[in-house]
Length: 152
Image 1 (cartoon, rainbow, N blue to C red):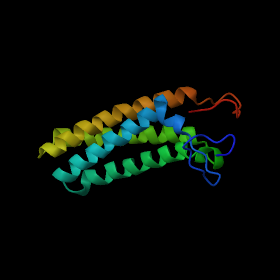
Image 2: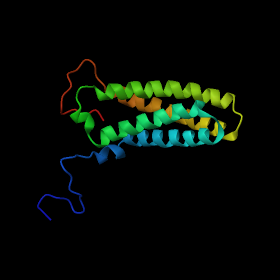
Image 3: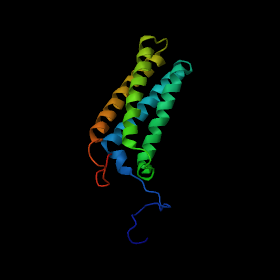
Image 4: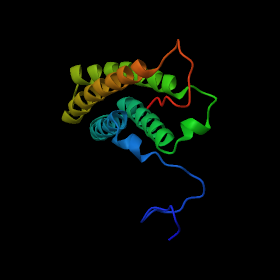
């Protein structure tokens, strides 16, 4: 083993990983969002047609993409976008969209899976609101962004 390498570490071809993000408050929130929207997806898939499935699948894919973005540190490499602000907008729109869909599912449920999916969607809505609030507090519009002040 060479000097400076960690025991059990897998050598990579220049790819950096941010495993600490998964242990942070925002990382735990993102994983909880992913789990709740996946459970809502499963509930809707077993109970209804594609009306609720498309929205939950889309939010599952977007949340998965944002987790990969932060874990693989792609937000540091792709600097064309201000990723924290995109994450805030995604969380807010996902919360609004899922809230409407979940309220419709809860009020007009015809099967228990629809009710369960609606309740899980409401839980995901709360998680997205919390994520947007935590991230929005850290996004500053009046100060210059520096490399020494991490956003996550």
